[in-house]
Image 1 (cartoon, rainbow, N blue to C red):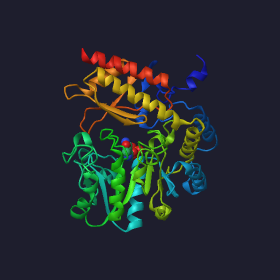
Image 2: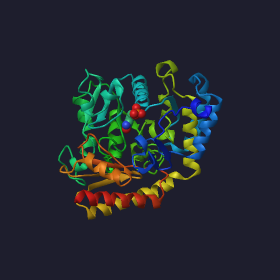
Image 3: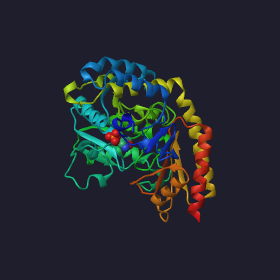
Image 4: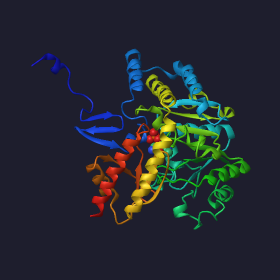
Length: 412
Ligand code: PMP
């Protein structure tokens, strides 16, 4: 036996290989409609990014963020044109969405001197004590004692299940306007900010009507409340604009935007905050972590931005997203089990009736070569369809064909 085989044991997870939009598991190929954990935005093998990461690893894997601040500033400049014009400062010291949202909470609290954070029912902003407390998914909080005392939850813009029993078109965006009542009656009177996912992800892929953003902004302006857009899921091209806040949700004009997930392109952890210049109030020691702004994270972030620009990914997402949306609508006309098709860009979803076991449906999809994910909360019957942003129109058609087969076997 050759000594090289003995000296090179198989390490890592040899059963799994990523290739573009495909995940190969023990040789079997699946279209990854979950883009990993919604983070493998540019597919598993974007060559420029992988090559740059190798190059960085060959030189150095870790540096304290004291050494990387200047590079972070250059990367911020690279994304300047992708941001709303009023955004002028950054904080790139996190590697998780939870961390970025913690930073945002600290920023708005320190800048305003106020404590409370308002968020939406069913929202998800992270897994730390603070961000779990701010999130509106109560089941994650049940086992713990009061994780974040300064949190106020309000009904979100889920028109299909309107909290106020209103009908779209005649509601005058009551859910956004009533923010005022919650601030008056349910807060401590010291509200720093409202945090919202422009399109609520884990809570059911909820797409608000476009006017919702404008009314929310108006209301917050009147009340002197800042807006944090949690773009951990919607950022970096997912909805066909760099951020949802520069496209579908532009009227939100957030004061702070947080990002993570897709910012690492091929799944490298990196997260950050961008904000109005006057909100650049944190000292480095007030919010930081060992691996924040580490060289690999910064390389992934920079190369992801360059890749999106160079390959005109946003244009592609608008085309493929529209094709996917229309294809899902067409399927829903054939299969009555499939309802509520909704989404922007490549952030699509549909519902199944309560009589269908979502986990079973996802298992059948697996047999047809698709990796799908359900919403574990919200109303618990949502299936999300969010392939990597590099998916081609031919691959979208293949995906839809496989979903057609899945729905057909589900009907039997
Ligand atoms: N915000 C949103 C909208 C998310 O979807 C998530 C993760 N699912 C987070 C924050 C937390 O990100 P992370 O898991 O990287 O901490």
